[in-house]
Length: 268
Image (cartoon, rainbow, N blue to C red):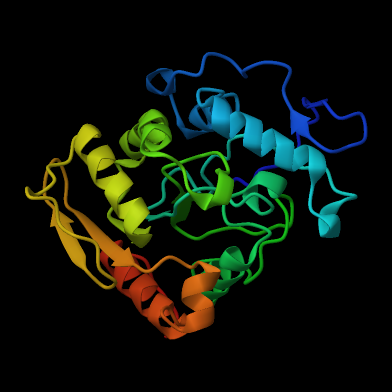
């Protein structure tokens, strides 16, 4: 059974007008290595305040809000991964969108990039529905987990290298916890690729040297400690999808190939 993000009621409204759901303090020690399972890791992620610039930005966006969402309460916190703890296929993005996952609290939910990704996942049979509008909309993933190397929405969608590196231990621990079931990974975009390869190395896999370059459709096989196939895919950003650099058919092809490598059944 997939685990969606829901509002458990343990958040403090810092705006007084329903603008930001944020804790009064970290939700337990923010130590990735101490996480016993993915549920514990997800909770620790949501309490992280390690990058001052990102904390300020995500919370400012959640306070001011976009006009279209002015009546909504934003998540305004780091966003954990989404999907079953025994996933055999992992999708790695870039970072939460300011008015997408930073608003909803679930990866790729509530923005146009997510519209493209979840539609493709549904079409190939890896998601229960083709839309993702909120953390409690009933969406579930089949054998797939979605995560990102940076957990907070960055200004202009551009985290700094320092912020990327500071956030990396969360992804490393996520990979360690997924290792028993993980067989394939789709990495969206060059930034995600550059951030993910060091994380795989730190999680125990042998990454080729020199590190393979990103390209759409590229496939790299890691063989130790267990076989893991990595697939590159252009990011589902509006720039790529609006210009046709990444088409729905291209995305579906990568997802089907990666799902096959992960041992998952897809629809033709």
